[in-house]
Image (cartoon, rainbow, N blue to C red):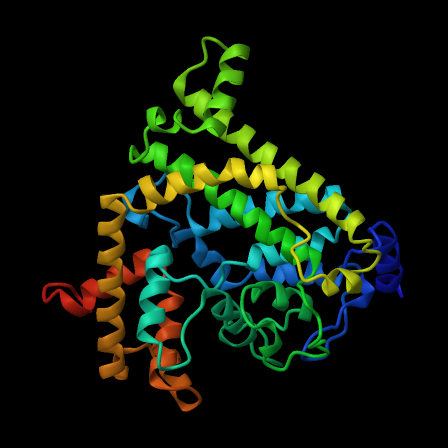
Length: 383
């Protein structure tokens, strides 16, 4: 009874269009709910205690782990996304606990070596069902995590699993209960995480790019959006150091983007007349999004990142090297699966060799993948 009373109280504090705790479509495997934690709180806690979440500490964004200790990892990025997402959710009176659970799980399916690893596995698996980090995240929480004796995976709620699979074909959940095939959109909570991911990704790659020396402030000054904040900060603090100024500009960028999303989303909710979570799913357009003027302001900054950071020759070298590591590891495991750990080999009974190898590599950290490569290919390294 305590759990139901708690859910009723919390649901009463949410906007009419928020996803309610009591409306959850539940879990694949039936469990008694906790007396003083909501379904999404338990999901969040299961994610935090998972091995896959811990491994995010040594999976990278742009820079490979050994390039330096000061760059973002998947874990720090995930925590930043969760912080931004909760801020937006609170302002819109959405379900913060659902938002937090989705945010903390949104990168669980990422490979070592950032998007280079994903691209390599996608190419290697193109005739075996493909590879997508969102679907891999779903596979992690439904199958690969082994924490409970009564069921595989983490047995997360339907709503959190939908959020993890956000960019994929969301009608294809394994054993997903109650999916409405006519729904045109994702929950507002999942849309919030997508928006927060974009904000965190762009601004923190900007920060890392400057810290690495791959990006130059002089080049950024040619972009109106950056220059606008720099001028304002110099007016307020004429003697500010370059390091502090950079931090203040990036902080201001995040703040103005979050504010714009909140204001634009409120406007769109009102304009579409959305009065329930179900109605939000009936709108084909994005509800949680930037205004058109803000999109226009962001565009040159995003193009700058693609041109000067993601296509920088050093990043390109790291990317190509990472793809070679992944391909050579993949090929040798597929050729001789006996080199896989015993616990991984046991899964060959239920899945193809390539899928098992793909799962194993996707779960590696940068450091583990590099060590494994040395063990397998360096004749002087102990195996």
